[in-house]
Image (cartoon, rainbow, N blue to C red; front, side, top):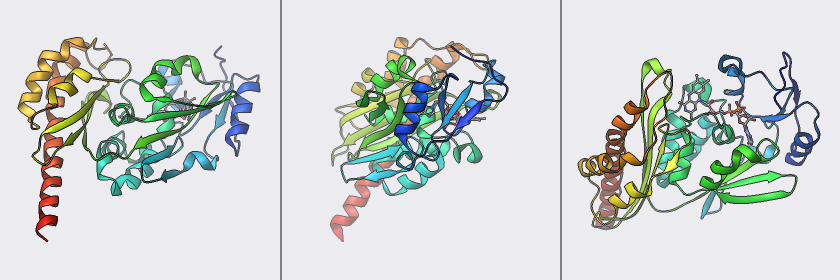
Length: 300
Ligand SMILES: Cc1cc2nc3c(=O)[nH]c(=O)nc-3n(C[C@H](O)[C@H](O)[C@H](O)COP(=O)(O)OP(=O)(O)OC[C@H]3O[C@@H](n4cnc5c(N)ncnc54)[C@H](O)[C@@H]3O)c2cc1C
């Protein structure tokens, strides 16, 4: 039930257990709040504020980024700005760094969080969602029954029913030796929400041939998703943006593009192949730079 409230209550727990307990027991229809960049605009979307918000901001474990050499575990309360900064030393996660660094504007990036981006069910143009899908991350969720881990695609499919009783606590990102890129097309009149987002990764051998790839598309359908057919079209050959655009034109019919006030669905489908081309061109550049670096290292 959604409760209209002019002055919602704010509960600020210091631990995740306390937050989960409060979400389960509050009689004010409580939901989590993180950076508040989506929640604060509820009235503009015609949605009343909830009776109570449970802030995740003071929970230390949600603000951490831990690197164990195999996985990067990112807390849900990490902001886009902090994430972009922290990923500077991880070339394999360029797709995520670019998504965090290009979304919205600098002041929003200092507030908006990883968890908020992944848990906002009505936000089709969220940048981190396709980026994290392309990296095959695991979502870590905590609720009254304890911790659950699941592929991000499953979290996205089930989050509507699971939230707000559960809290997304972390995402675990594998540190794989891939090149990756995040391409987004914006329109000024659309308030800079991207019309189409393409996030892609590729594992490329020394000859420049793609051994495996992932492609994820955001903002075209209501929820971002992987595009395995497009990824398969990249494998077994050198990265070639022009060939990728042609393949994307052939394959784009599988998308049910969403209509919105700012842009028609047909337009999203029409420009999707060009954005795939941009992403693949960026992968080509990264792959070339990586091979040149390795070549220089070999000669040194
Ligand atoms: C003008 C403007 C433009 C923007 N443009 C972009 C853009 O182009 N791309 C982009 O990616 N972002 C953009 N954003 C930011 C976007 O709002 C956030 O990325 C995200 O959707 C909300 O993050 P938040 O931390 O502010 O979440 P909040 O507003 O605090 O919460 C949003 C929702 O998520 C839930 N929630 C938050 N954290 C959790 C959690 N850990 N577990 C469970 N539920 C949780 C809340 O209950 C709420 O329902 C923009 C924001 C503004 C104001």
